[in-house]
Every structure is written in C-alpha cells, then in structure tokens.
Image (cartoon, rainbow, N blue to C red; front, side, top):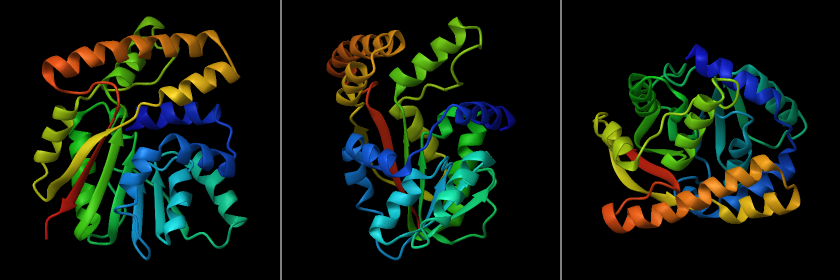
Length: 255
C-alpha cells in the first residue's frame, strides 16, 4: 500500500479544491449514481467512506441527515477537509488517517460503507479481498457496502499512458471487468450481492470540458473514449457486457 499512498500524495498536490462548486458539479455529473446512493444513505445512518480523499461525498451525505467517517491513507486531503469542516460546524463528518485493508474500527459499527474509485489502484488481488472483508467486519448486520470503480476503458487507458511514458505520467490502475469484480465479492461469504450495474461514463461532461477549456490532452482523452464507445456497442451485442461505463456493486452483510 506504500506505492498507492505515494501516488496519491503526488496526485493530490495538483488538485485545487472548492467544496461548494465541486459538490454541485459532482451531483450534476453523477446523477445516476446519486440515485443509487439515495436508496442506502438515509437519515441517522452512520457511514464510513473508505478512501475518502478530500471528502466531497462525505459532505454530500450530510444532505440526507447521515453522520460520516472518512478514512484515507494520505493525510494531506484530510487536513484540507478538516479545515473546511471547521467553517461548517453543522456537518457531522469526522476523519481518520488509515489503511482500508486494516480498518482501525471495532466490528459491527457502520450502517453503510462506501468506496469510490479506490480498489483499482491496488497492486494485489489479496488487498482487494482484505478491503472487502474489512468492510464486512465493520458493518452492522444487514448493513450495506456500496462500491464503484471506473470500467475497463478508463483503467486500461491509464495503464497505457503509464507504459508509453515509462512511468513519467499517469497512475497505476488495474483493469477490472464486472465479472472479475463480482467474483471477488463471491469470495467474501459474509457479503451478499444486492444489485450491480453501470452508471454513465459522462460524455456530456467531457464535451463541456473540451469546449470550455480545450487542450490536446482533453481532445486525445475524448477521442480515445469515443472510439472505445463504438467498440463497446459491438462488445455489448456480441458478449452482452459493458466495458465503458462505470461499474457499481451493492452488497449486504449477511445477518
């Protein structure tokens, strides 16, 4: 996990945060997934966001009257989040620095555990399994784990950039397909799958970004995904699976 922490420390240095604006953009761009979350994020629930980063979703969950604990292996984004929380005393958000494969909490505490775009950065499948087991351990009986990751098109693109630049650009991503991810859940017997599916990749947002602030990098990014989008239509018709849109899985802790 040291490599994961180091990469995110470098990535966070380039990030500029405006919580109010960022959360509005996030809600608009991820409306489909927000609709999924609404089924599980309720008033008076205690939520753990595993790999929270700057904690935008931690803050968003307060809209539903939930209390949230955010944990991340990198301390810098937690410090930024804590500074923001000091100006918003009404928010029930708390932060902990730690490793999602070894959660520093007792068992049967949380109503919901969420994780967004985290496990695809892990090098070993065992680390993913440990993360799922730890999520199950800290969940109350009948609690839910809600997990989402980018699909194969995005993760493969990042591996390609990393390889072509000989490690100078990009961040490690392990490409997962829905079937591989589902198989991992099957290995954690205390979790029962409730639902799984896809949320839109977000071509509209990508086009808006390209027209508002055009760049060669964004154009290449758009063209890559446009080509993959056509390829994905063919793959769907042949093997009936999706390799473009974001994957989400919801699992319930067996009582």
